[in-house]
Length: 271
Ligand SMILES: [Zn+2]
Picture 1: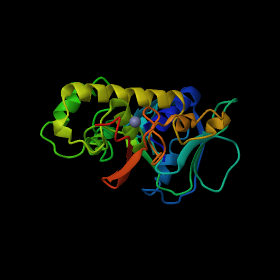
Picture 2: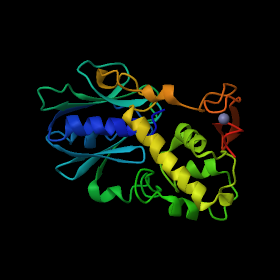
Picture 3: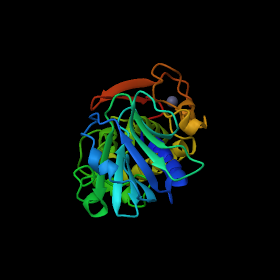
């Protein structure tokens, strides 16, 4: 499943290849994704020019000169790629007035992705964006903020990190890795952690996400045919490594289920 670093990698590619280009034609499969596709609205984008490629949590917001915004969520298996041939799971194909770039294609085998067309003014009130917490890579996400969110809370710190009303897009893999980096057990009660340990944790979260973005994330391989994606998978210290040796102390890594998700930790390095 694409996590924040993968979505950010896609956003950067959209920024490089879309900005300044006009839409020459739009084809949609018409198939239902997480929401029904707004076919007429999608087709009405013909003639508009891409002006910006932003990201909020795991939503991509592709803004046009008309003030319209194409909101894309990749869901479980969605991807945005540039290619000329039509394939089985394609749901949106956007032709561009670019001689170098093939059309932009949204492909999604399992169809949990989402395509919406909104006005810039509608974005802030969109039910998908309205209640989102802070961005983990923004300045707003710091020790004071996280300390405030944890104060008096009995729930495990890992659950706080996965709560999108607190902070968006960290995801299970990166939460596990950041907690390992900070030496904090995923099961530690949030309210018991000192401001100093939470400061370390916010730093680790930013570091692990930045490192993953530099590597193109963990799951998207062969992005734009560059073969650059997915290299972060090989750098995971604890995630998915139950019973293997800890990279620091060589004791076995353990796993525990929290909020329905598997968490991985080293009982010796994480307190
Ligand atoms: Zn260890």
